Length: 123
Image (cartoon, rainbow, N blue to C red; front, top):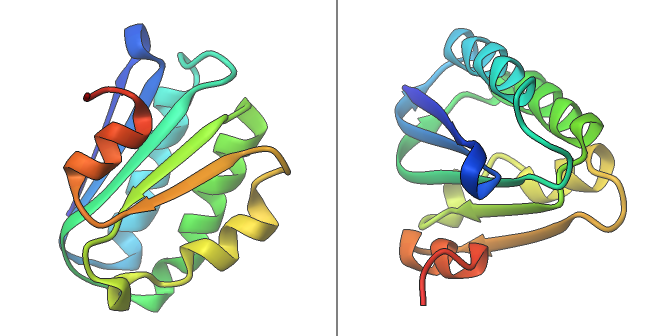
């Protein structure tokens, strides 16, 4: 399952994954991201929270790449990923090298609190 939300006032796009994510869900997630990006200004921040993720099918990779490309094209400035279990990372760091331009800051946190601190949204 996934949830996508945007807060234009704080220039933040949020994507949360939970349970078991399959390619069909990942494709729907990309379409929601596309819709929210239409309203986000250049220089926005992205919080990807995988705290509740049990598993993500490897078939989700093309959809993750597409979401990264869309964010890159829109002018993303900061990516914060919350990945409590590194075994559930399907290669986000490697994908980032090829799908985000230089200068996009990427932070990986183990907890949501750490992620929020990296965003500057929490003391």
